[in-house]
Length: 247
Length: 265
Image 1 (cartoon, rainbow over the protein chains, first blue to last red):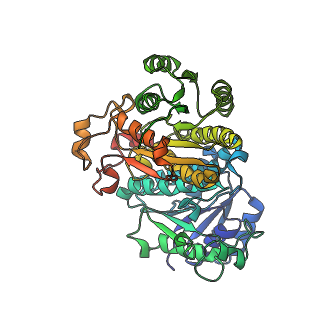
Image 2 (image 1 turned 45 degrees about the horizontal axis):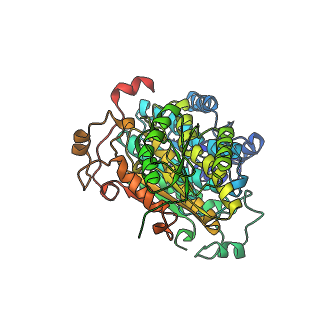
Image 3 (image 1 turned 120 degrees about the horizontal axis):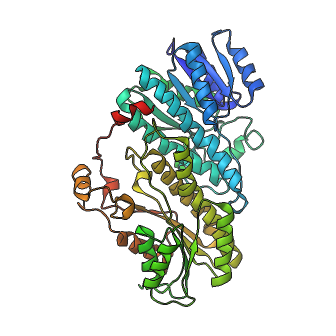
């Protein structure tokens, strides 16, 4: 067990990549606080994982609310005593050409994809620093953060900002032994894009390796980054994208 | 190769001081007519009086770039008055220090609103006009080296500039087919009122800048003129660092979250 006794917060854990991350952390012994706006769904995820660890818990939380983020961290600390791992996975994607992007869309996408991770990393970071916990934070970004594509400006911009946030946080928290890294997945088979994804489609999107990106691929990368095997990695971007960034 | 903008209309935001002021002067001296925007209308009027005459004449607009309604209204007014927009310089920005462990939500929100959302709102309004007019155009975004490397102690500023840089690349891809160019100037430390508390000698002793000096606003104005001119007609999606070489070095100052702020966290 790589993560026995570790307490982990995973956001966007109700389905897809977040769900796979929660499952992977649980299988290595971590106690998982699975968070999502979709409470019924995330409760089901926790129910499936409970046989491995009855301590797992589901939280309903809106990441863009500073008050809810503070409550979440306070509740987790009150319940478990410490937080060792944070995975900022919650994210939304909206496809629009520039002229169709409303100010509200900009605000909403940035609130979930960037502000939420900032608020949570701040709250969890403060806890880790005050307790002397050499914690680990992983932010799930996207290959969209690494090159230009049309018709998803808010998503790509928020993810690129998340990558730089990761680097800045890594520098600021390094003196406390806290490591902060980013994963950039390529297209991954989840409910969010199931209506568009097929192997043919993916080949056209520059996936150099055959096969479809699965949530478990990202989850395994998260496991590596939060484990001792990655103790010399901080401020890094790890692409799990079948080579898409090279295409 | 001539760097001239006769007959061109340029919007410059944050034109009342510093880098924006220098860019406005440079574009005007190359023959452009300016629509100058800033929160500080009086500062714009001082600038306007210094500029060479143009046809159509320069105009000044009070503008909060982060406010959607105002942005659309001002851009519409500019189109009505000038008849065209050829160049947009998204320079308006705010600079505040702050650490991840100590930043308030309000500080984060305001910096992101002006520095990232503002250029988006301006680009959307101006590109809409450029696309309808079918004559292309040039958009130049003023970012910062702190959006590319890590300079501790200005977390939200750095992240907002990283957002602006990637937004520019995405827009270059999306708007290129319309003949709209989108490029970034990334300044290193510059002698302006906004960062006046920084002592150049002290800064240079702690950072490694190969050219051993800080930038002047005119350095960025020269880069803006180049990118706005026909000399840059095959350049888009680029980040031009005007930073004395700082971006390519690896010696950075040590910075640690200040102990005196610990009580705030």
